[in-house]
Image 1: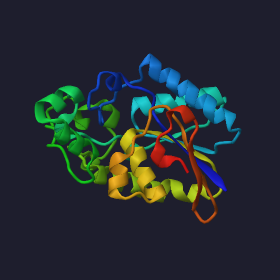
Image 2: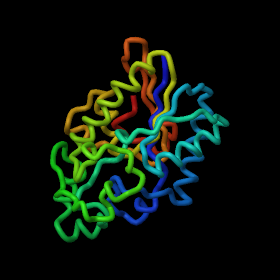
Image 3: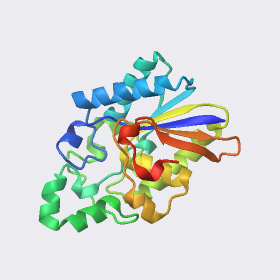
Image 4: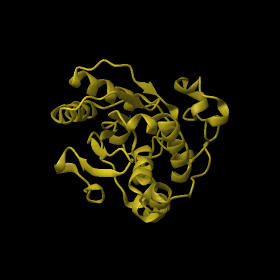
Length: 237
């Protein structure tokens, strides 16, 4: 038996501003840091030892994990993987979600945000928001840097990495992943065998650890949010 803990980063500066963030490397707000501290306290209360830590390449996920580790008094090195990054929102990147809903309609914005295989238009490579122009990604091979992504695209890169680098470790170890709404949605689809309709309605709250108990056959025994007040119905087992 082992535990996989999935944590969406605390509130970011662009979460607060209701902007499509994607691969833009935005940091936490003060409230986001408090959410990360609370996440650490909730995990600490479970009294389990975490052998491996992972985060995306992005500041909001890395800093969330650093705060959690500080609360846990655990200074293990953690693995940073661009494959765990948030979904790339293409030409929507940097735009305000509410303003876009007014401009193109709530249904179209919902389709871009929640559909399985619909991609926004590509983001111009001249944009300062394009990953090729962000120093964080200077060591990522350019052929792996997207111009836009659907949730399906995000799922494929996240799960490919998970199966190659993380899954085998889970049999005998507890693991924590600090990532993003869509990369965690991808993991939930895979782990909990959710269909495309379920994944489209799945919400991942910021800073609320999702703890998944797994047996030796890699079957889910239990799945719960550690902050029950902010739990979402779909993942209560």
